Amino acid sequence: MIYDGSTNPNVLAYTHSHLTTGLIYRYWFQFLNFNGASPLSDPVDIPACEAPTGFESLTVKSTSVSQTVIVWRQPTDAGGCSITSYTLEKDDGQNGEFNILLGGTLSPSTF
Image (cartoon, rainbow, N blue to C red):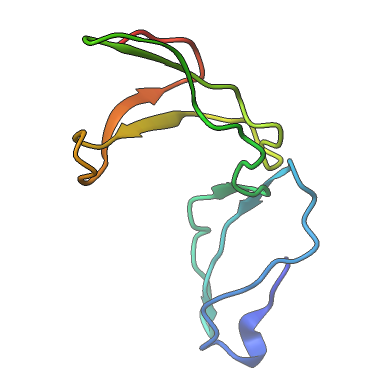
């Protein structure tokens, strides 16, 4: 048990500090009253990590009137967790809003 809400059952949040980066913590809860305890909730696994940082800008490998080949590298700091996916976004060529062009795992692609 990391928190006992018996002194204030109206508290509906808890901050778990001093986590170890890279570990996955499992949490679940249950409610208690005079008659006993509820069943345990389904567990939730939450990794202790931050957003990735330390990535380089996109690099244009080649370009022509009909296509551009863009390359990138994985970030130097994954934030303590594995990189699971990415998205590549582009605008409409006229500085309009961005839309997802490509998403998936970190592997080379041609589009």
